[in-house]
Length: 275
Image: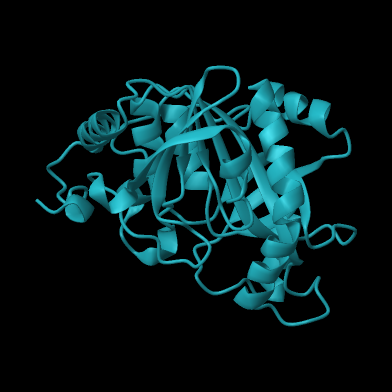
């Protein structure tokens, strides 16, 4: 069975595939346990260079269940990093987005693999649109909660998981020790890959959202199921449709990410020091 299609067979157990992937990571790195995992979204990639010493870099597609990223700005690698504290971080640069059409198992696989390596903390980052008009492109914000508008879930069968305090209040407090000015908001995941209409953004605002994007919520649910503590961070790459005075573009997202990358990567590295 091809590595990328291992999760496609409904007869397979996605947790078995995650354990197999974790075993392959351990074999290739010689590291049998990771403490923290980070998925670095648009604009956050440079943090991997700052948090510690990269001892091993793996092409993600060499590991069962992983696919090459379809989005510019994602590296397609898995990195084992030795932190100054002596802990180990697994940095995931191979996020599968729901809009790619590979199914929820593929979206959740990186998180489940991280959990299978031993990681107890999952840091999920993304680039997203902001609804609060005073937010500026390039501003990092904490995710306090989410609204999942994908009409899907990584949970299968009669699996019931409590999502209270999904985005850990403890970890958000640690982040504010690094930067007390960090604002926070509710992240709303749309299916994508098209950007939201102004009417959809207003709907998100009415139902309690502050950030709109196309990732993260399904990963967070999977991380909670795996027993991980979750920290979520969004880089506001643009004001959302109808909030922004100009049309949206992926180029704008990439440019905002590149401009903010040095600052937010240093911020994330300082946060990781406290985890």
